[in-house]
Structure formats: C-alpha cells, structure tokens
Image 1 (cartoon, rainbow, N blue to C red):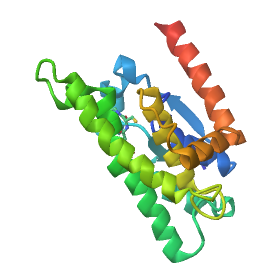
Image 2 (image 1 turned 135 degrees about the horizontal axis):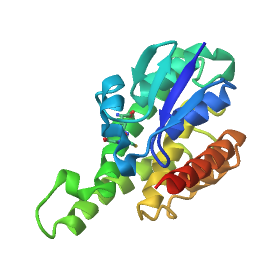
Image 3 (image 1 turned 90 degrees about the vertical axis):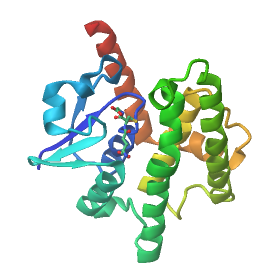
Length: 214
Ligand SMILES: N[C@@H](CCC(=O)N[C@@H](CS)C(=O)NCC(=O)O)C(=O)O
C-alpha cells in the first residue's frame, strides 16, 4: 500500500503524521511550504482544490479533512487502537476531533492571519482579542476533560494528537495556556512520545530544507 501525506510544518497535518507514526505505518511525506504559497500552485490545486493540508493519498485515492484521515488510519491499523473500542466512546472521540477541527481551528486561523477575516484598518488587535476569548473558553473545557487523567480516554488515542496540535499552535501564536494545568500536563506528556519526537525532528529538517531552498 502506498500512503502519501501532504504536510506543512506547524500545521494541523502534524496530527496524521503523529498518528500514522503511532500506527507504525510506512508513509511518504510531501512537504508543502505554506509561507511560499505552494498550496495554491496549480499542481497542488489539481489534486486538492481545497488548497489545504493535511491531504492523504492512498493507492491513488485521495482523502482530505483531518477527522476523516484519522478515522481511516484507525480503520487501516486497528492494532494501534487509535480510537476507543467502545462504540459510544468512539463517537466521543469523533466529537473531540470535530471540535478541534471545527470549534478550535478556525480561531487559530484568525490569529494566524487576521487580514483573512477582517481588512478594516487598525482592526488587528480587536480580531486577535475576539479570537483569543473563545480559544480560552475551549482550552478551559479541555482542561476539565483532562483533570485526573493522562489522556482523553483510558489510553492514547488519535484525538490526543489533535488537541496537542491545537494547544501547540495557540502557544506559537502567543496565547498563554499556563493557567490550564491539566491540559498543559497532557501537552508536556505528549511531547515525550516517540511519535511526537519524530514529528519534531521531521519538522526541523523540513524547515531547514525550506530555508536552504529560498
Ligand atoms: N478542516 C480542515 C482544515 C485544514 C486547514 O485549514 N489546514 C491549514 C493548515 S493548519 C491550511 O492548509 N491552510 C492553507 C489554506 O487555508 O490555504 C481539516 O481539519 O483538515
């Protein structure tokens, strides 16, 4: 089976990178330089008109959207136990991943590029503040969910990587999450996983290659 993941440093495509690694899958990574607009080049638009990452190609068939990609990884590699086995808990896992991609991610995108959502002069600080408030509300919920537990479920599952990305990106974009002790403990725990270490190494190597090429 040929698995290709289109990925960009810092982006939410690190979630399937981590989970494919957790599943011990063999996969090829095609880095996309978002800062250079490579996601809007005709050759990428041809395969993914949504111009986003992550994007997965499996034996010539393509799949977009993080939640669907993670469900595929879980189905393909069941022994990795990337979703809870109990059907109701599996739905809870899908609910958490959908929350990360639909409830949290859009506010991170606004912080990342305020101009994309509001081009009114001098509105940057206001857009940032309006994005930050719901992020804090959401991470407070995550903090409650992680109180007294190591992972979102009784063992590591895919949604842990999704939340990890969201919290990492928020901090990279200047949001202080230190008040959320349980969520931050989860975040630090995630950093010690070998899949996450592998991601960090790959990200650093990709950034070096991007810098050399420019
Ligand atoms: N709903 C999508 C969102 C993917 C997404 O927005 N990815 C960002 C990077 S984190 C991206 O590719 N942005 C480039 C663009 O919007 O053109 C998912 O969850 O997979």
